[in-house]
Each structure stands twice: as structure tokens, then as C-alpha cells.
Amino acid sequence: MSLETARTEHLDIGDVRFAFRRLGATAGTPLLLLQHFTGTMDSWDPEVVNCIAESRPVIAFNNLGIGSSTGRTPDTVEQMAADARSFIQGLDLPTVDLLGFSLGSMLAQVLAAQHPDLIRKIIIAGAAPRGGEEHLVEVVGEAFAVAGPDVRLPLFFTPTEESQRAGRAFVARAMARKENRDPDGGDDISEPQAKAIIGWCASKEEDQATLRAIAQPALVVHGSDDTMFPSINAYNMFKAMRNAQLLLYPDAGHGALFQYPERFVTHCRTFLDE
Image 1 (cartoon, rainbow, N blue to C red):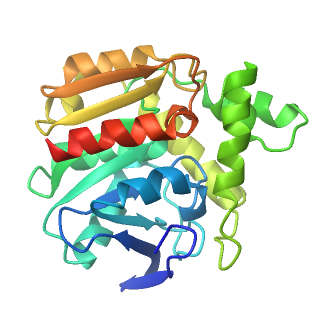
Image 2 (image 1 turned 45 degrees about the horizontal axis):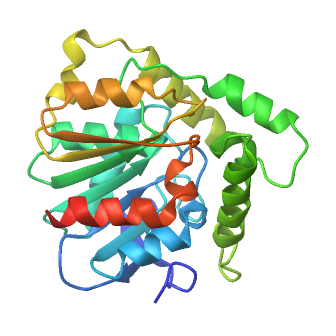
């Protein structure tokens, strides 16, 4: 079973139907994937997900209103995190690890701080802390203004030929699933998610209370040239958390984990297996 072929399952909680896919080993602490701005299950890199799933259970899911999940997309990180917690508990999972990318990394921070018994370890990639520096609207606007084959190339990768080559390879991998792909979202997803990200970064927090409440082991992975969430965010998170490791990937933008999939998987495995 792979991310490209995994069957889409559904979990009903109240009047909401979550869509999700499971793959990998049946034993071990599951790794739950928390996706980026407007991203669906099909936005993940199969090379990253499939390699991690060789040694542990992995669960990809769509939060409320995303892709093939029902419900209305919230406009706060806190509510998105609460919805993710409902999904975890709905699957009767006593403990999970989290891999959050971009917006998903913000949810991971809230979940780890508020539910230490539920969350064992967190990997946060392309992250910003509460009150961090972001240039979401500016960078997304510039990316859509550039004519090109895929908006992720200017958004996630640097302008160098090496980074763009890696970006094109990532886009090809992310499009590998041909059947039952998640539908792309519109303004009903992008507008509340943008509001949530901007609100998260605009909420200055005294003494970085959320980060200092995270006692679980954390792996912070960031691109050296991330224009959406500058790398100073990663350093500040590393300094504020009690048990964090920091990795900066060279000549890498917001999608550093997709530019260096083999390196990222190796680092994830080492961290999760410690």
C-alpha cells in the first residue's frame, strides 16, 4: 500500500465526515500528517510519506471542509487543532506523533501544548510560532502572478536551477495518484485559512507561552531561504521549546522537506525512533 494507492476511508463525527488514508505498519505509534495552506491528502510527497510508512503507521487526513471531508473550514488555528483532536480521538488512538507542515505545524504546536498525553513527538516543517513573522499574502500573490507550470515551484522552492529541478520532481511525484484524487478547494478554504495564519502570526504572546508549554521532543525543519515564513521563526522556536532540535536545509524554500525527501526521511526516522 502506498500514498498513491491507499483507499480513502471516512470517519463520521457528529455531522462531519472526515476523509483519511492509512498506510504502513500496523504496530507502533501512528504518525499523523497535518497539511499546509489549502493542501489536501494528495498534496503530500509520496516519496516522503511512503518511506516513513515503511517502519510505522502513517495517517493522512483532510480537516474540516478540505478536499473530500465535509464541514466548514474554520478561520482560527485553535479550532482547526480542536477538529484534528476530534479526528484522533474518533479513531481511538491513545497516542500519536505529528508531522505538521506550514499551517499544519501551527496545529501541531497547539495540540502538543494542550494535549501532552495524546501527542508523543512533533515534527514541524516550514513553521512559524504564534506571533511569528509571515509574508503569506505577499508571497502567494507574487507566485500566482508568475506564469508557470505549477504555483508550488515559486512558493516552495528557491529560484536556483537545483531547487527548481527538485521542485519539478516533487510536483511530478505529487501528481502520481490518478484515481480518487481529492478535489481542489476555492475561496471557501483559502480565505479562512489565510485569516487563521495571519491571525496566528499577529497574536503576540508573552514569553512564548505556547512553545514553552511543549515538553515533548520536537524536530524543527526549515528551508534556509523560506520567503513565506523566514528562517528566524525556526530558530526562535528551537530556542523557546524545552526539547527541540533544529535543522536548516541549504538553498531551500518553504518546501524544504520536499526538496530533500531522502534527507528529510532519514532525519524523521532517527528522531521518531530515538
